[in-house]
Image (tube, rainbow, N blue to C red; front, side, top):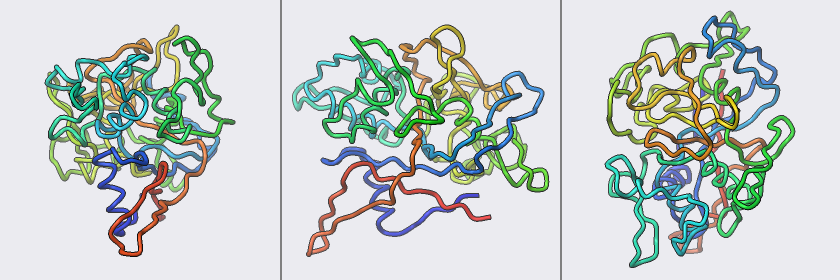
Length: 328
């Protein structure tokens, strides 16, 4: 299982992640996914068998990217609201389910009240790729068209080899799957997989403090704040990999379509499982039920904080990631 620091600095960084809009960027909370070289899942399910093997250690987002974080990104790369690369979908403002508006008076993207910690939706695979490019390029005025995903004239022309690249990426299906379902303590320490992204094999529950809690309804509904089911984490410490939003992965399902994993708020129980929770969609599709989390293919530093002599002002530089520490 994973444990996390609960220091005052971590609390500050969490607060900044909630607002997602500081002068110096956003914070991304990640966990380390170790046990490199693990075997793939041998379950009989079509969408489970053969998945989850990863030959390297990596970090993955503890949570899905939130509206607050995405709004900070929009304000950094599209301060005029020109929306050149269609990073902002107007449904984010007009829809009951969207969480971000464009304020033409202040020329600023703003998060709807109460939506700060809800995962951003109405985002495409290309939107997510540009977001991770921005992270790789240092945030702020960092570009969106180059990084590990290279765009030319608005078209994606190059994607990363996850085994050899360094930087921020959209997790591929194996990385996403391992973070969700792999548990190295199973099978007398040989490792294995669960059918849901939490300890044990219990079916999902709506109970807030349950170890198998998830956001799903079997019909239309709105997402919950990321990490709301505080006891329902994967072995490595990720949350919401069952329900809330389908998450983009950097794996092609067919043609140019990308794999989506995990189910969404409207899903039934089956869509939340390793065996059935898989879909695919075009890279420019932006549904209210599509979101994403990020991954890093290089070790990320501990949070760094500069305090003023008065101890009242802290400056947060770049992307700080509070890494989870695993205890056996």
